Image (cartoon, rainbow, N blue to C red):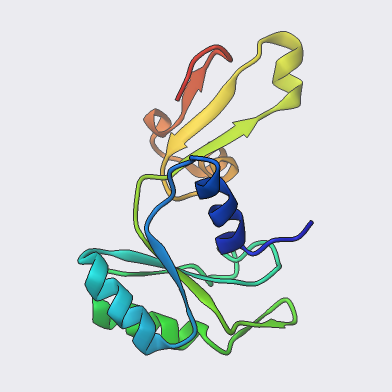
Length: 143
């Protein structure tokens, strides 16, 4: 099954998981209006059925409604992996927890790496100048 991010989030919400306030938009003006309603920074994500939107530089942030408008203009109509962007998910920003389970660690000592950051955990492991960004937890711990 292939779902757009907003479709997956609708399923999560239906089953009681908390998700950020968001709206699917098809114009930069809609992005500006929604960012005004939120009253704070927003994240703007193309709704395409492809991976690596972040690496492609296609996940943008708007600190105010005008910036959300400008960033949305840049994203709408662009092509990512042969798919034209016609819809964006605009959401309030919130802390993001990246979670990675490494099977090779399960053999010796089960652990999971968690980071409160908007960067993928593998990047953080390789690039982080701040080891405190990464916390190792035993598998029985809860986040």
